[in-house]
Length: 364
Ligand SMILES: Cc1ncc(COP(=O)(O)O)c(C=O)c1O
Image 1 (cartoon, rainbow, N blue to C red):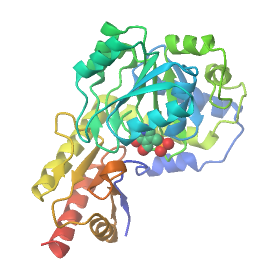
Image 2 (image 1 turned 60 degrees about the horizontal axis):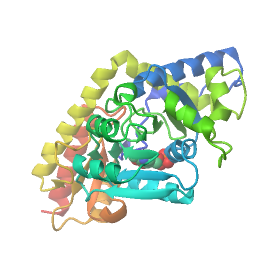
Image 3 (image 1 turned 90 degrees about the vertical axis):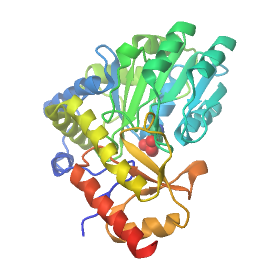
Image 4 (image 1 turned 45 degrees about the vertical axis):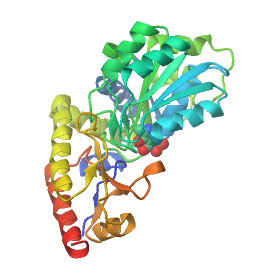
């Protein structure tokens, strides 16, 4: 029985991408690799919605992207505002505190989003060097309205740098770095981009690069964008060995997505979310986030009374369908279903059939 991996990352990887991953490893300064690296860097610009942003592709998971987004623009004791819609928003607080920043948090209730007036209030009361947003918080399925949020920042505090965590969003929902005036956006390879875990891709605006250049003390070596910039501008240069095969896989996947059309790919994600949500709600589950703020990339379903998390997920696993449990304060209360990347409508229909069987066999 083939397993269907429907967790919100890592997501299934197509045979084409696996084939690209498994080709012979060649030198990181070989023309054939450099050509692919340059293509991947250029293609990432389209996913982040930037023309001139400086792209970085670095071995490490999304958390490295989170950390680099802060270490490269903020010095000790500077003010950071974290807008949190859940567990991954909160991670910015931990990273900020670890780095000795003055961190304030604007946190929503689980499944809700923060309203624009509270952001305005925070920005009016204190000067923040940067504000972080999580485009889609993978613990709650809430999507941030970045157009609205960035507009407020531009109006109330235009010098504040905007950091956007796109780990559970990039590729699955449009990101418009230049239009929104985002200064740092990053993602991971293992979600809507449908590559195995292992890479973080980032884009820094000119303002963010200049913030790094002005910093007096750097507290990261591997994650310092100034060490990586020469390599990203000319991959024949060397700083630390790039993940050659992962970059082959990334370029293959980006190429496949762009071949289908990025807008079509975004539409596919919306369609999959709709396909999954109505029937699961009809089984008695509640969607944690209301439809107008729920992300197209994953759904978070609250169990109805009588359905236990461990039992439900293990019975579903016996049928070959893997979904994730709740995390943080939602542990045990919900299951999370990813519907992003290479997932197709048939996969969702198959999962729905299995969920129905589990409910009929065990819970009715
Ligand atoms: C929104 C978000 N940010 C950051 C991370 C951390 O990424 P990683 O697990 O690749 O370090 C995740 C992981 O799921 C995530 O969903």
